[in-house]
Structure formats: structure tokens, C-alpha cells
Length: 202
Image (cartoon, rainbow, N blue to C red; front, side):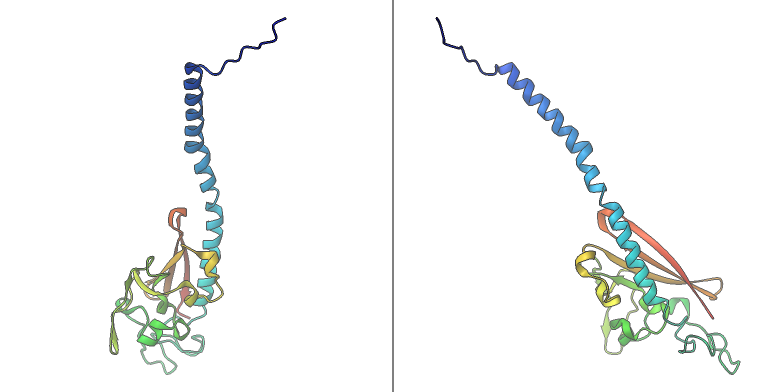
């Protein structure tokens, strides 16, 4: 009785077919499945950007309308009309931004909504710092770095907002009756989201 069992491996053709099938499977995974895994993070970043914008608006909208408004919540007089009825002009559109070096470097000293104009993030996200020479400085533009996000909103956790930065712009609408505040939250490859609020001259 012959108990010898003949053993045979894969032929060359079978090996090539196996490699081709594995390559097709990997291409399918790389092209369709893996990008979906990355896209699944987008809703999380959208929620984080909304939470960040809400915290930033809470900080900004607590300030008065303009540098020339009454410091007690604009309740006594507004810019364009002080308590005695004398003209008290609002800040010119070209001069919106922090009014001195102290306001520019310390968000806690900001007293009106346009004092927050600029970029809030690390030095790679906001590469252009504003320049300062003695008591004179160039007012921040949208690309001018103002500080870290945690400088603006200390309650934000740096660990939860890695790779996210915000730019803030303030401009007049409705003939200086309103200031439009735009907070753009940039989450890198996960998207850029704009949030808008208005502060009235009252």
C-alpha cells in the first residue's frame, strides 16, 4: 500500500494571480475606505470650531461698541452722540483695531469689539506679527499675529484645539450703526468655517 502523498505548492501563475488580486484589494482600500476614515473627523472639527467661535464671541460681544462710546455698556452715550449732545465721532473705518500697545498685547485690556482684529494662533499659523517702535505700532491686519488662542479665550484647552487658529475681522455696516464681526476658524485640511455676529451702536 502506497502511503506517500504527493505535495505541491502554488504554481507561478497562481502566485501572480494572488498578487494581482491583493493589489486590487489594496487600491480599493486606499482609494475609498481610508479617505472615508479621515473624513469622519470633519464633524468633530466642525463642532470644535463652533465651540471655539462661541467662546470668542462671548469674549468680544461683552465689550462696548466703540472706543469713543461710554465705557459703562454704552448706556450713557454712544459714539456720534455723547451725554451732552455734542458730536463724538466713532472710530474711522481705517483705524479699527486696538488703540494702543497695551490693548494690542493684552486682550483683557480690550474695551471695544474691534480691538480683537488679527490672527490668533501659533507663529506658524499666524506668521506676520505687527510691528512696534516705542509708542507707535502698525495696527494689526488679518494676518498679524495677536497671540495664542488661549490668550484670547483662557478656557480653551490647547490640547483639544491643536492645529486650529482663528482670524477676527470687524467692519462697519449700515453707516456705522453696526459692526460686523467675522470669526474665521481654520482647522487646516478639515475645513475653514466663518461665523458672523453684529454689535449695534446702542
